[in-house]
Image (cartoon, rainbow, N blue to C red; front, side):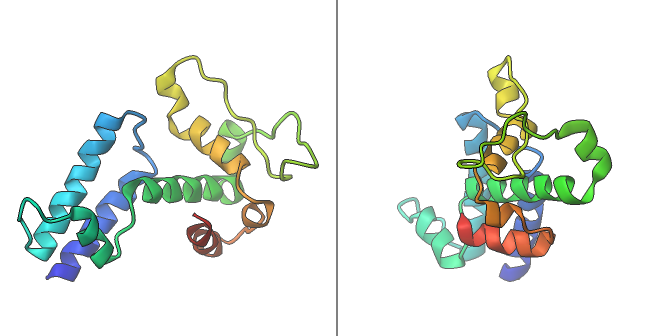
Length: 153
């Protein structure tokens, strides 16, 4: 029963992670509170002084912020390597790639006029993609990329 609840929570939160990653702390806290309540439910520990962080650690649940980052980068990887239509529409190569600092898979980060857009999927993930190690970004297989990225983050 607990493992089913944990699995459903993980699937639901992971599905929405790559699409909805708010830049505002108040919105992020709302998502975090959903997970906190679910962890308390799974462990049947509703004592107000109990540490939810320790409960998450006991269950092996990573922070939602790192799960959202992992999910976004994996989606970006799939678009970059496996969806030519979306890649040609939304992802362009960087105009300048420094051989000393950048990897050859560097992409153009779209310019942002608003703070809201700067925290949206494409600019935020493009920036993070450009700062990943070249050995990691060169992995074409999505499963191997996810495993390597999990170890890196």
